[in-house]
Image 1: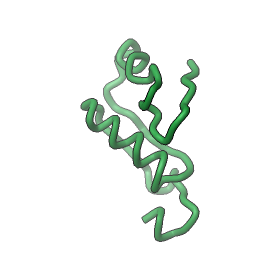
Image 2: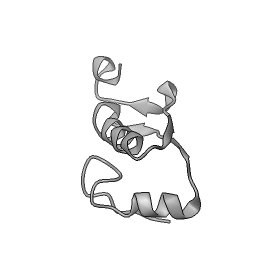
Image 3: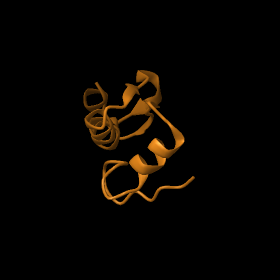
Length: 69
């Protein structure tokens, strides 16, 4: 499956929530670059939609250590 993501959140203006619900997903494991931006906003939107979240600290990165923390 592919979901085109035009903004910082994987949920904003996408069909991601519809797809995840169709697949029966309840827990999301979020990883990626820009933990202080894209991962943060996607996590926030997922939380607002009642998904359980797992965000491994060793699987996210930001431009600086401070931003990542």
